[in-house]
Amino acid sequence: MQVSDSRPKQSQGKLLTDESLMQSLKDAIAKKLMPNVAKIDQQGMYPEEFLRNIGELGAYGQIVSVEHGGTGRGVLPALKAIEIVSETCLSTGFMAWCHNACSWYLQNTDNSFLREQILPQVASGKLLAGTGLSNPMKHFAGIEKIKIMATPCDGGYILNGTLPWVSNIGDQHLFGVSAQIEGTDNYLMAIAQGGMQGLELKQDVHFIALEGTNTFRCLFRNVFISNDWILAAPCDRYVEYIKPGFILMQVGMGLGLTQNCIDLMRRVDNTKQHVNQYLDDRPDELEEELENLRLKSYRLAEAIGHGRQLVGKEVLREVIQSRATASELSLRASQSLMLHAGAIAYVHGSVYDRRLRESYFVAMVTPALKHLRKVLASMS
Ligand SMILES: Cc1cc2nc3c(=O)[nH]c(=O)nc-3n(C[C@H](O)[C@H](O)[C@H](O)COP(=O)(O)OP(=O)(O)OC[C@H]3O[C@@H](n4cnc5c(N)ncnc54)[C@H](O)[C@@H]3O)c2cc1C
Image (tube, rainbow, N blue to C red; front, top):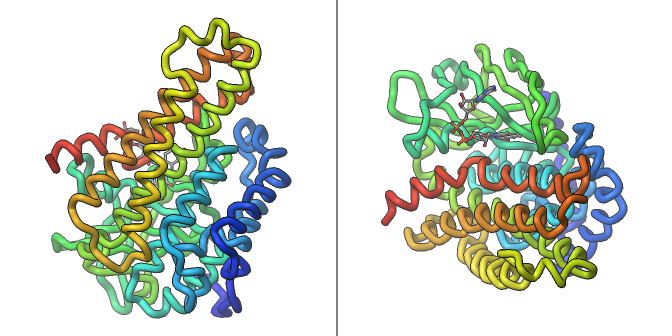
């Protein structure tokens, strides 16, 4: 794997407080993301420079311990960072989540090579990263078969199979994968890299939204992963460590997108309030629900903290419920925004049209709303 061993001194975001992190992210969003949002959405522009920039500001280092280049503040500021980016652009907010998910995997592993050599580079955004855990999560929930098989060999494993879609990746990017260990009922989790021998990244479809997310089909043909790059094998207990933070951080996407829909509805109301008042899901109603979800998810983020621990069943249930509520609110808010804005929203390329298309992604990216409801039903 082409990864340099040099450890960065410290994440520049390390000394920032929560508020100054948010302020510096707001400034970066206004200067470097807002001008490119339409290109990201319509032309599939990948905002690599911005993604690296917010890494330097500390957007990926919050869930990483201080000795590995982060701030050690935990899931809460990471969730807030994803929220604030998603308020402007869900594609980029999703990629901020993808990257944070991979940081979270590295933060929770017992593998000292990954924690000491690789994590600091991911925490600072020097190495960009994604996650290919949709298939295993659906597999563990009884929704689909596992797609990657790992055959043990001298010094590691040989991986074969295909992951339909993995975002925020490229030749140098890292991403988390999971595979069944051949001949056993056990699974492993590992870190793969785009340029590995035997791994082909294919981009053969266009998406109705999220087009700028560098999303590829990943074909593993006899890809060797050495033991150095194994996060956990078997990974049952490890998956329980990462699951709550993985799911909860996605709530940030729904919080940010819903907030922007409400703000845009209020803007439209400046001239249309006299008639928009007869619509359902008015900004004030949605704002109350959004604030409840925000407070609940912030409280849960504090309960999850820094990882490397099991959370109680009730906390996990609340995390899953919050993630489902984030999907439902995003759908309702973007639909109501369309109706508030009226015909102007129907103009191709309008912000209203983009927010509507983006909102469906909150409800269908794994764990999708149907997946979350299945798990909630099995827990009650
Ligand atoms: C833009 C985008 C980015 C994504 N990024 C990631 C990521 O970073 N990591 C990750 O693990 N997952 C990613 N996914 C997958 C996502 O998380 C969901 O698993 C996926 O959208 C399907 O969810 P579902 O539960 O609705 O699946 P289902 O209800 O099972 O529906 C999936 C359907 O799509 C079909 N299908 C699957 N793959 C393909 C394909 N390549 N071409 C044509 N049809 C196909 C299946 O046969 C099935 O009918 C991404 C998906 C999209 C659309």
